[in-house]
Image 1 (cartoon, rainbow, N blue to C red):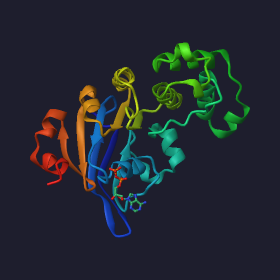
Image 2: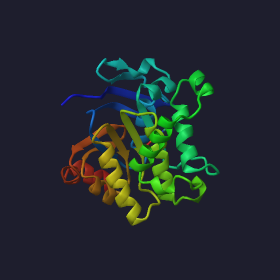
Image 3: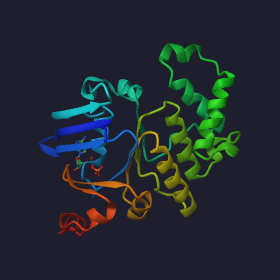
Image 4: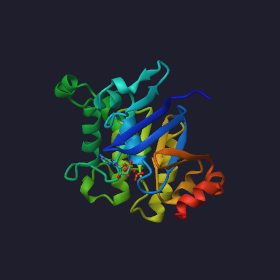
Length: 246
Ligand code: ADP
């Protein structure tokens, strides 16, 4: 299988504390992956490195067919190269409609000068409809984002990220605070998205990870402790010890 993102041997030290310790990670171009691990395992720092927010002290982060080093790119360049990140709290424009939010996201996906001159055309409205359909919000297009449920806001934000056509989507705890029905819809959405791009989900909720039914990477003390199906990693004695605090 080909590799979209290859992280090898990265380490980060904060004030003498090694938050990431010789971590390597690979993901393919159409793969769904869950990253789990106890608090402080390094999950957030790992995503910060991939998105250019934090620079590793050592190691390589290689992207795409042309094997570009992401360590040479700024955060904005990495986003434009095709890496989108969804934080846990949705940051949608509450007093704007779902349509307006998606249009703003389309506008933001242009370069700054093009965005300044941009006026939505019929093709952009088609794209808004397609994005809304993809994230299950077609009926909600005229509604203000502030009136949406928590789950719908999360899907809207995913739709806004999709406007940038990311080839890798990093999603932080998507199921947190969702109802059971919303979780099921979110599972279906993430599985669907991973058919045409790489999706990395950082998640604490093991029931949700089970539903994703994907390869799982377990982080501990800034390194990969185990990798494989959820059943495989939860039988690993090191993983059991870490989770039971032994
Ligand atoms: P996780 O997301 O798995 O909970 P983090 O990546 O947030 O873990 O943190 C890994 C470790 O690095 C933690 O011990 C955390 O306290 C430490 N850490 C993270 N960011 C910083 C920072 N900016 N300065 C100092 N320590 C940090």
